[in-house]
Image: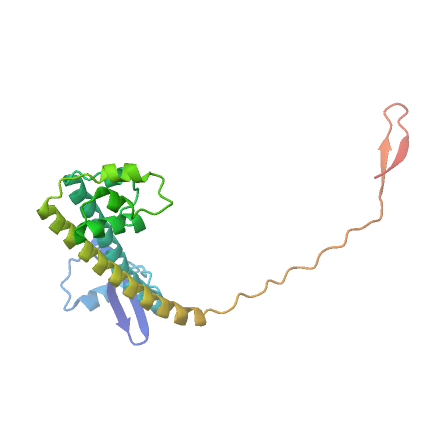
Length: 216
């Protein structure tokens, strides 16, 4: 995005619009070329959000990257467990939950007894302890345990980075909320009073073609 500024005048032009217009003249500087395009009405003003919104986006982008990285670590944990013939995903839907993290960290700490690992499951897990213990019967390959440990450490690092971003976002949102004016009350038009006076309508009878009043 190119910024064209002249004294107090600011104009933001998108780079795609600049490429659409081909130049047959040789301009000394790019700013003069942009000024000429703007003079002919060939450039549209590009949207530029307010400063506080841009700051909010700056905090949000790295947070999104950290969340994506943490999800990738969970997928690699699951892959390492599958390679060790540990089918924990069949009894636990989310490996990043309380039960999944307790079992994975216990495996890295050296626990190999499936029944002791199954006792770490949360009471709200639908699978029984026997089913969980059966899914934890693996071959415990040392190189995959090392990979699992590396992914857990990286997952914890991403979680700390996400928490730091959340703190900065909370600070910025507090300052952002203080400047928001209260919603204005809508001035509704006064309600129209219904006219209770009954009107008389004259109808013509088809039999004698005489007019007869009817009350409505």
